[in-house]
Image 1 (spheres, rainbow, N blue to C red):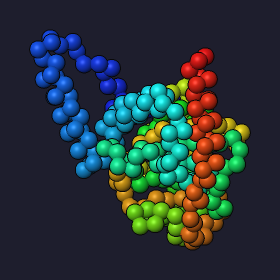
Image 2: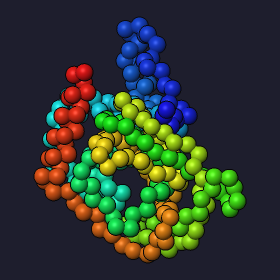
Image 3: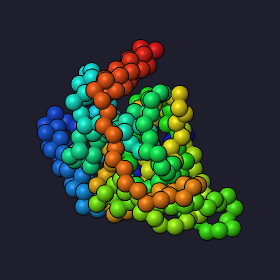
Length: 259
């Protein structure tokens, strides 16, 4: 089951055209897509972002498969507080930021006080490259509602400092949807929606994703234990760590393609 975007059912190809009209159709298509990208940059429309992000991610994945993932060794790469490696492929992509996320099956590096449930300040669309991505989406609720759990919460002023927790209080959340996506599938999460990723410690998972420009200023973290105000510096991956993860990813992809 995948968490679908409302506007992801784009036609796979344009209707057939006469040779004399191909140039016109091509220019029109470029102009239309350019206008959509401009709209996303200005208004961060979730549906339009998902639709274009899927196309861009599929094309990027194809290009990566045609080359060697070790070509990405020079990229800035750091450990996310939740324990996965982040490779910044293109921080100036037309749709926002293009990243590669890798959850290794050993040696994950986490923030000691990481909060498993969190929101983002931007929309997210990802394509699964290897493994199965599992995630639960939550909805804020009130006390006494069936299925609701009370959590401690903390805010992050993301546009100022994305690694500093400020004390916030408590909140009530209830799970509304769990998704499991694999086999070149896609998953999307709108900005400001609490969610939690579930990837087993012995699972190797990689996703290629795009994040939209920010649509809000603050992200919120949720945890069972109290979240104290704190600051954290994300550790950089060593050259050997990057080489090991990228080589493993390439090996897994080649094996999957050859089956």
